[in-house]
Amino acid sequence: MKEVFTRERLLEICKGLVTFLLFYFSSYLQVIPIALFNIDVNNYTAGDLAIVNTFTDVILVILLVILYFKELKMEFKSFKKNWKLNMDTAFKYWFIGLVIMCVTNIAISFITSLNTSSNEEAVQSLVSATPYLMLFTAGILAPIAEELTFRKGVSKIFKSKWVYCLASGLIFGFLHVVGSSNILEYLYIIPYGSLGFFFALTYYETKSIYPSIIMHAIHNSALILLSIIAY
Image (tube, rainbow, N blue to C red; front, side, top):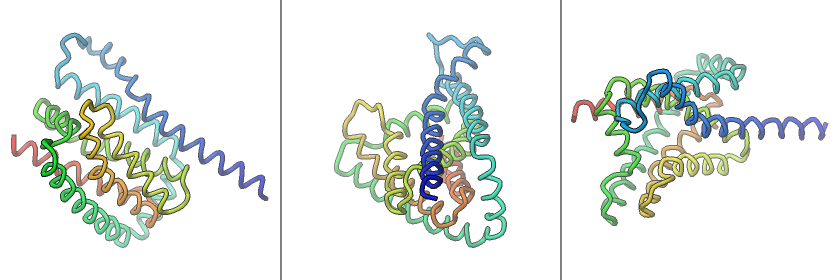
């Protein structure tokens, strides 16, 4: 019995690692739309980047759905059965995460010269170039890919509730700032990570990925719409 459990646990960890590999290496799929649409990489516009990102996100989502297809079917049945309770939990944790995110963003702006993260600036640039494509990509595709990766994928590796939530939040926050040349930008791990932490808590308590996907999609879509209206 112990040997069976060990094998199952190892398979779960491997599945979580495969999830991260798919997410990380999905960027290499960009060569496909670049070749298909004859995009000049020497004159890469924000619009070109938006098209390429959408293509890679579509492929990534398809691969992740295939990887977790059986689990997604079971979790959808559970979600339908308890959708009101699940969404109440999701909204509660999203709101707490949003408050912490806003407060820490304000604190970072107050104690540093930063007004926003490089990640946020890049998103704003893409929204300005292709607003409605970004509404689809950032509002729908990204939440699905990120929840399957940072919530479901991480849950395969860490089983302890608080270790899982903390790891999910920190990894999620870190990947929103990684590569920045300004060391102060790594403070944004806190606001991004807080939202990731509470999305993870939502998944842990509801045992369904759909509530966190929905709240993540609402969150992102609202921000994109506000950006479209503002600009």
